[in-house]
Image 1 (tube, helix red, strand yellow):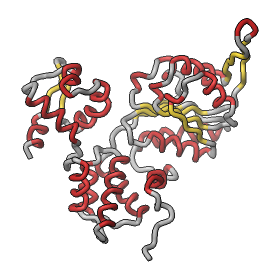
Image 2 (cartoon, helix red, strand yellow):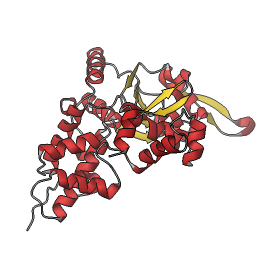
Image 3 (cartoon, rainbow, N blue to C red):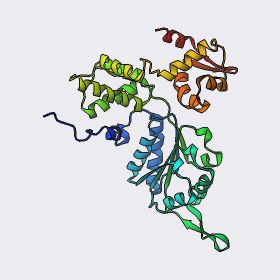
Image 4 (spheres, rainbow, N blue to C red):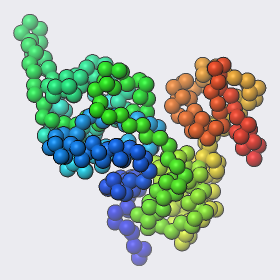
Length: 325
């Protein structure tokens, strides 16, 4: 009977097990790790809670992982909430008043906080107090509640949408950048070891090149390569196995997806590679301009396939050459 690794037998739980359990296991983002190390050590030395932190960067770069590690390093409880789920002031008040001493509250998608909810954070972060309305109508009154010392860690992909009053209340703001190719390869090797699968160097390089410099995507491609290897009774993942995954999901060896290629082709053919504005591009693609700016553009800009000019976006020569392959 085939042995199954009990730690990673359920696919939906694999991602959590692939996450590093300590800062020493966290690959990449060296400047951020050094900054956090100083903040954590200083807080411990003063016997204080950690200052409030803001992480921003593209999806899949490790913002949630860093928040988890901060909590682990300090022995604090971590409570995770998505900003869109906080629709009522009472919900947030209940969460804040149930925090224990030095808990870490992690708010994901912080740029989507309701303005009324956001204002409650101001006094909570500044003075450790919140004001709550008790009762309704003329008999209603406002009472002030003291909160235990806690740390708010917020994560966002759109730091420009975080209001200045909220942004200014964070003790440190960290930008998670795309990972280097060497770091991505190390992450793939580490994940393959955890998953107990063999993978050759060429396959690792192929996944890394198509991972869009993002650990989450690298791990996703590795997991699907493992699926194909297991279905075909392969003892080792080779480049050919990885290319089957690419074909299955419409990905090329540069990590371009169907929507990326469609956008580039429209810019070249429909607009004759003249500078095109975001609104015109959104109309041609039938997409919201925020989707283009948040999902399509960052990677294409990173690899130099498109360029922003004062008059609009243009496709670079390298992209034209690649699309001809």
